[in-house]
Amino acid sequence: MDAHPETVRLGATIVVRDSDGESDTYVVVSPDDADPRAGKVSSHSPIGRALLGRRVGESVVILAPGGSFTVRIESVDMGRDRT
Image 1 (cartoon, rainbow, N blue to C red):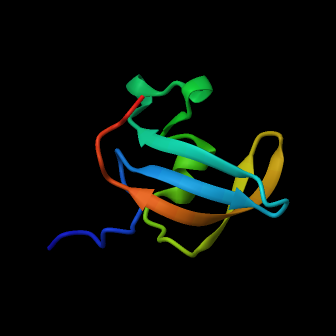
Image 2 (image 1 turned 135 degrees about the vertical axis):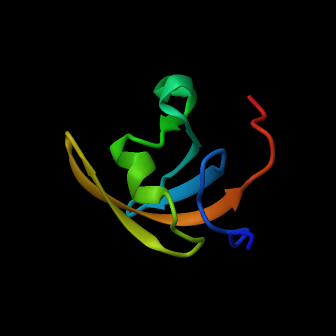
């Protein structure tokens, strides 16, 4: 059975919006491919763990070392990495 196309999974490019209206784009990758400065977050990182399995429209609390913050998932794209 295929995963829902708007569900965050490994390889997904996700656009999230925070409570201030600022948006960020992340690609969830394996730990070996992580490059946070390029927006590639490890599936084992606080951001990656919080987003995996979530869907477009969901609000997600991310528990990061610097504190927690909430984002809303605006889009999920399973296309190839364009960077």
